[in-house]
Image 1 (cartoon, rainbow, N blue to C red):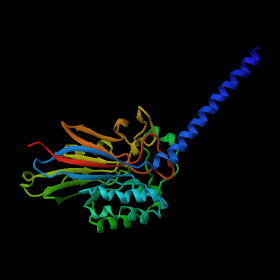
Image 2 (image 1 turned 180 degrees about the horizontal axis):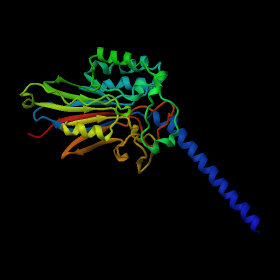
Image 3 (image 1 turned 45 degrees about the vertical axis):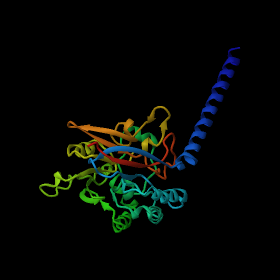
Image 4 (image 1 turned 180 degrees about the vertical axis):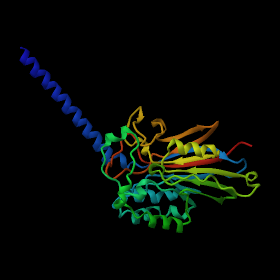
Length: 314
């Protein structure tokens, strides 16, 4: 009798294990074959423009991770030009393959007709490598310096961005005038690689702060140290990517990792970062792609973000 009960128990356990394995396989298949292609536009509204200014549309792109043959992603990116943004902000990780610069530039061609700024991410510099996914739970994964043999043709990409009029904010600050409003930008090279060197916001003239202006800070990876030194200079908006929104999330709970020291509940969306008595809107994009070594998204659809910037009340 005992032997028979053991056989029945083992049989039930085996069926449960097989069922769990089948369910897991189905979820992975959905995330790989379907969800990672469900591109969408998240829209947010922020009343941060000086009173009396005309509204603006800011399109935030991040983590495209382009590879050759991604025709669906290319077509979707090209169609974003129909949103007619006033400004495009690209927060890096555009590439995931040495042969991806051409497809990327073609996909972004219509958007490069609009004013823009950009900063790079680690996967603009280096091709991704296969990693143990459980390693992300041990903390942020750093890109080793000996991956120079995996260097991507980022210089060509940056050159074309610059020829299109997009401003490189890698450890730089610069201003532009858009619809009569001065926009002051600051940005850093990729914090995930430790390449960030903060230069502050443009100084301008001695009376520059008296004129209407908007301050925007841009980084690829939203490490807390970066958000803190941005916030100390009182920007009106901080934009970042890198997290992929967690990429594999639990419905009803959210991200399990952010691949940096940002709290996981901030891995995607519009929140407010507080430091030194200041409170600044922080938009972290879940991005549009994945590493080609981990081509799956679960409960975390790819996104571009359209920020509707409105004037403050007079």
